[in-house]
Image (cartoon, rainbow, N blue to C red; front, side):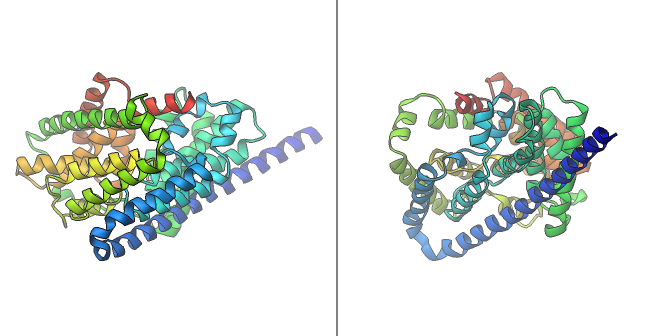
Length: 419
């Protein structure tokens, strides 16, 4: 009897800690959102006042970030998504180093500074790593397989709270984090996502990440599925080129990657100058993760120029090559927006919003090779359920094209990360 009572006590204690940590993930996510928004508001204030001095300002901030990363915060390297995807292959020692509590502070600090620099990066991947790190505190005394489960649960909750997309977090966990899902993992994951999501909604409101696209702006006609396939193919090809350049810059053993490793500070300065020049050439459109332009475009308040996708791609590539910590999720949505806008520019029929959505889901699906996650997330961030079928067609077309040219970018990063 005493033994049963003791077991029940342990069970309740575990569940209480679990709920508390899920709440903490939500609170940290809220703080992270506010911090990044504050950093970008400072940059937007400085940008027109600095003018050509941005060529000095941007690389200076990036230089500081690389110094802090190499000297004090090596665990903050990368976007956060590859770390989460590698959980099932990590040793206990690796887990201890990657998901140490100090990684929460270092990720937030360096992405705050990266946003302050105007670099094209997102906080969402970092929130995934932060969520896993928080849940790691509960898994420390568990066996390694059960500890990995807690990390996966935290990673899914982090993604869901980053975008306020609980279904997206669940689907991402099953599609990417859990290759052989079991029911108790699913229940834990859903509970953590729900709790962290409730906390996020309490502080930030029940918002849609990109607002709500009006139903009247989304049309079903005879051509919509053909358009979805074409945009999917275009986005898939662009994602392949993007991933290959990222690999050439920072993953494969090339002359450039060797020079980059041996000259991290020069590399940060050169890339920072290029990011600043691209920003000046684009009239400021390439700076940041693209959230503001994407939201305005989906709201019908901004028509993206056809050059937007090129500016955003180049800025993202040079920000990544600089070694600045940050993710691809939000940036992928912005690049996809630009792809949809480019298609609409040359095929001026119907409203552009549906092309923006098709480009977003296609590029995200192709880059991450997670089409179900991309579909659910784009639907949730834009409240565009009425457009579900065309989004599915675009996501699957883009993923198919991506698969024809090899592995996704995360798979290469995981291999490098574990080597």
